[in-house]
Image (tube, rainbow, N blue to C red; front, side, top):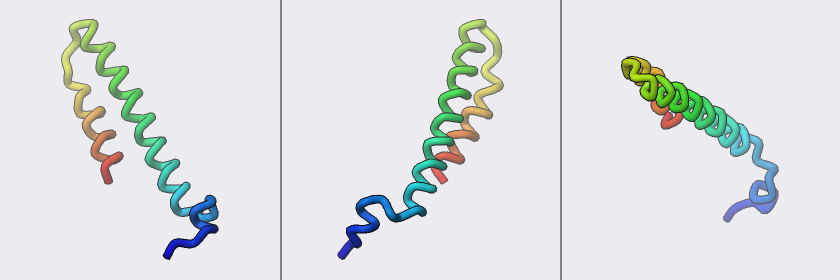
Length: 60
């Protein structure tokens, strides 16, 4: 059975994990925006590694 206190938001670990996930998602979005801007300018897609790394960290 779950605790009502945890359900109502007294579980700090949950919010810490949620915040970390949101920060990683934000980082991924910024890397994707940079990548798309460079592709639009017909530059090399060599910066795809930075985007891929940020996605890997988000999945951990």
